[in-house]
Image (cartoon, rainbow, N blue to C red; front, side, top):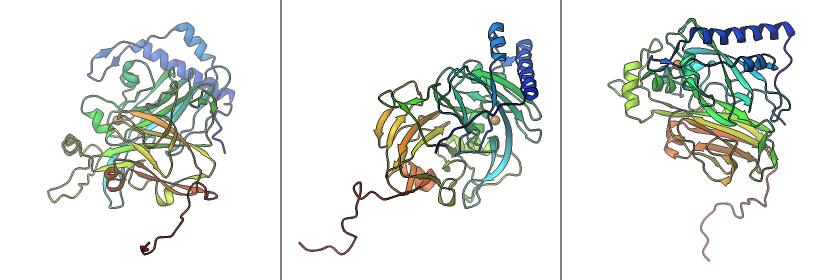
Length: 391
Ligand SMILES: [Cu+2]
C-alpha cells in the first residue's frame, strides 16, 4: 500500500480567502516589526521580498489535515511542478492526560492535542504556512520553533501567542530531512513546555522522493511517527506522584524534578503503552516501513528487535546518503531521524530505545504486529527447548 495523498483542490472562493489572509498576515508582520526574541529583546524584522511575495501568492495551496501520531498526514512521496504552500491549522491545547496504567497524570501542553504534536509533511522548496491558535481556555503563552525553518529563532520570535490569540507564520522548506519543532516561549519555560509534551516533527521530502544508498529512487509502503518523550513527574513526601488541579500549577515542583535530569517516564507517543498491545503498529511481510523518530530534549537509540535499520538517515538529512543495515541508531536530543525496514518475517516486533532500562522500566517500547508467511530459511527452531541430552 502507499501513503499517497495530499491536496484536494480547494474551492476557488476558499482559496482566494486563504490567499488574502495569508498575505494579510505577512503584511502585519512587516508592519509591526515587533519580533520579540526569547529574552524579550527585539529581533530583526522579517524581510519580505515583494517580488517573491507576489510569486508566492500565485503558488498552488494545499491544506494539510493533521493526524495524531503515530500516523502521518496523507502525502505524495515525490511531486512534480512548482512549489506549493502547505497550509496548517495548529491549535495549542493544554490538557490533563494519564501517562501510564497506574494513573500518573500530567497537565500536558500540546500541539493539536497530541503528544508528540502531529507530523507535518512538505517537499523541498515548498512553503509551510502555519496558523497557530492558543485556545482561550489555556493558561500559558506558547509559540513554535521549527528546526526546519530559517531565521527568528526558527519562527519562535514571531509566533508568541497568549491564550485567545492566533498568529500565522510562513517558512520555506529549504532543507530536506526530518526535523523537530517545539514550543520555546523563553527561559525556563522552554524546557518546562517541552518536558510537558510540546514538540513534534516535520518531514521535508526531496521533490523527487527518497534515494537509497546507491542513489536509486526509493519508496515506502507505510510511515509511522514515533515521538519519544521524557517526563519528570514530581513526587510527594511519601514518594507518590503528585496531581495538580490546573496547567502550570506544577511549575516549581517540575523544575526541581527536571534539575535531576532523571526522567520518571520515558515514553513513546505520550504514555507508556501508547504503541503496544491493542495499540501496536501493524505491517505485512514484504512491506517497507518508514519510521520517523524524534526526541526534543534527550538522546535516544532506537532498535528494532528481530529486524534492522535497512536504511538510516540517523541525523535526519535526506541530502545525505543513508547508512545501511544498522542494528541500533542514535537520535541526538533535539533532532529527528529516519529509518526504513522491509519486514521479512511475521510476528510481534519490539521497537525500543535500547537503553533497556528506559525501554522496559520507563516505557520506551512500541510493538509492530507483522502478518505474513514465516521464512524457514531465515530462521528455524531446529530443536524445541527440552532437557539437556548427554552426548
Ligand atoms: Cu508552550
